[in-house]
Image (cartoon, rainbow, N blue to C red; front, side, top):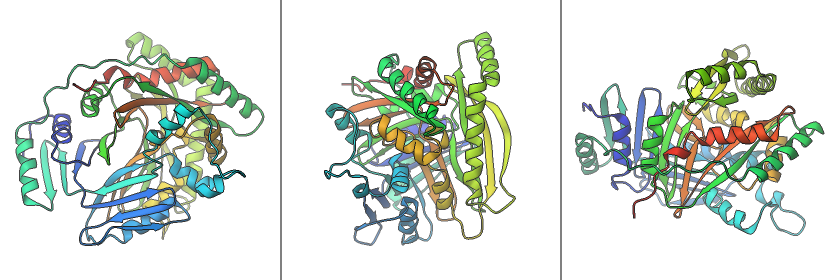
Length: 453
């Protein structure tokens, strides 16, 4: 059907309509997808895999090994000849792979290792969505908006008709006014973490680690309206909005984690090196020159690109891995980054799940070497949950597209929060890294819309 309405308004209208409980919005360049309702479902918990498919009883079984393999096997068993799935994976998806099972992570007393206060641990349960590692759904209705046209597919004619009527009405009205969130809090605690990381790097424990901080929001938040406000002010590589099992998130990802075409071409787009953007032409030009000439930023980006190459070498055919657009400046909302693209052709026998496994978590949200950086993050921070994980779309034809979850709002049980981090290397200073988190938080903090009472 023809659709003259703004795709953002259409997506926000569908998400806020109440037609579907579970839903996902995923934007790629030139294409917006709304996935509504649940036809099939795959949920990966710590040690448990649950699936639900049409015409079959829900299943639950233990799993071991690589989490990506568990997801691969779950979708291989889907009783659907054609399917698209949408959802998210948590940062701890990587910890399962790198650090072993939950039982292996327990100390001699039988208690799981954990840092932080009791209040932080309560927040962890929310941030991790109950310890969940991944949640993907095959939707009942899918709406794709591209080139001014909306295409609707689904399994129920009545649902399709209701969606068509909503689209014909033109989508959501303009969102309510935002209530900006103050990003300049928690500075002392964050600077202390950065100083500890710099000391560890000086001691040779790792080369780089991303240290993040969480910013709690004191009032209930309208996630859909925040997405609409924030997307209008941002220039993301991908954007997303979802509500799955009561866990909501909206974000403006600056970075493609892994994109795999049906023909096996895989691409990742590491961004590392950051300066503020959007402060006027003169200020933006000055910070861009700083970004392109700062030895610390250049080093941070170069080692990230090298790591991405090494990861693709593990799953791609020899001689196919290449770097394009090396250290190009990418403008992403309130910040600008150094960015490069690394691509290759999957080796025979390799699939999109192998590519995701090789590249996850993003090097620019974890560190170098990854296992040591992930372990360091576990000692410096509370459980991350979705932050620095991924939102993804995967299909029966072997294609996959995933966005690194940064510049996002998280919302569960009436409690919302933001989160941002900075890449710490030997040349980092606590004050500059704290300032970088403020710059990144400013991609979403000014656009947070309170929930109407």
